Length: 187
Image 1 (spheres, rainbow, N blue to C red):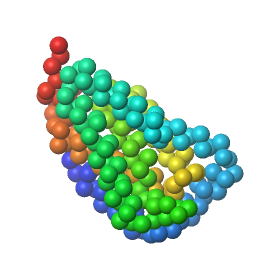
Image 2 (spheres, rainbow, N blue to C red):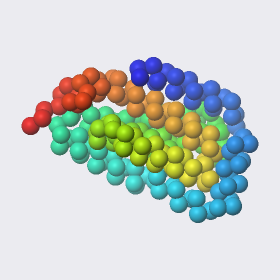
Image 3 (tube, helix red, strand yellow):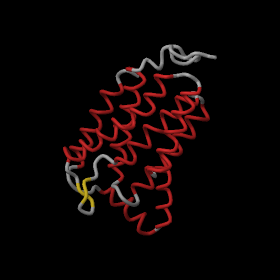
Image 4 (cartoon, helix red, strand yellow):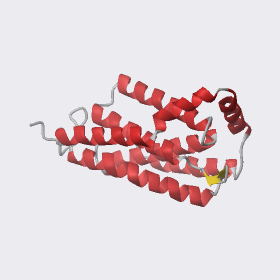
């Protein structure tokens, strides 16, 4: 998916330009849903920084134990770089919610990258991908009914997935499947 980083970043920019500085009807629907059902705010656990960074540390540790050094480095570096890009995006788009810049969602960007890198470490299987997609959908809803607009979270999905695909491509982590990356030592 070498083309996805370009498509994902283009989609991020186009969505950011389309939604502009304020809310959209879809965003309002999710905000109303959150006001009606505040318990949906519990879904923020899927994008919580402590939870996400703990998963990142575990995934990096597993990659290191497996001696998949490039994957271990990518598992730590990619979330950091993606969050920096989200911060740059927030300043570039200037979209506000409750007086704070919000597009794209940094928490969602971080969660997307960490969860995807964890799937790569665990092995891309149907169950791992299904669990990751479910967690991210619930995380998007959690953000959309509380701190962010729904479209902020969608922009973060574009940004985070672009960074993961870029890391896989640049790190050459997809070259030797199913055995793993080329610097993996099975001992």
